[in-house]
Length: 160
Image (cartoon, rainbow, N blue to C red; front, top):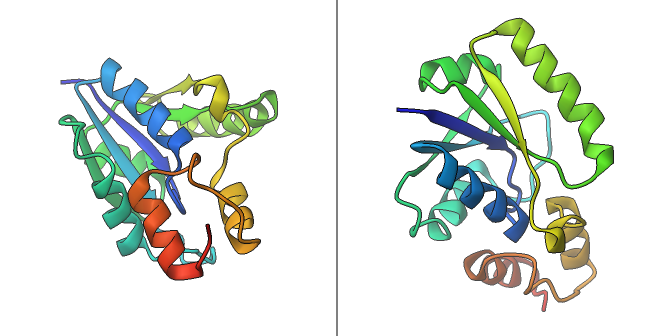
């Protein structure tokens, strides 16, 4: 069984994340969407809430599991028997950082490969931070996030 990890903070998960996840789920037998539990980073939503939101918008993906992790991604990958890390590249500017991380992960564990997937072009500008900013300014984010995330953001912040 070919297992891949799609790591990130997903704070919140966006339609761009889901696009990458669905592409990965077509390629691999199992994809673990792994939420990085980084206590140094201030989060919009708790890890528990992010798990709940991701579960709510991935019920149609039978080969996707949702989990959280702390520490090195390559250690977590080994733990779940994943041989591939999925990373999304929206723009050329993402490549330099992602390339550096892929090479570092290879140095730490050369049995784990990184693949880069491009989202649909309609999501190339989309990020969780953009969604958070629009939400704070009471803008309409309905076409950027799944329905359950939209509902949670509206409940929490009263956005459109």
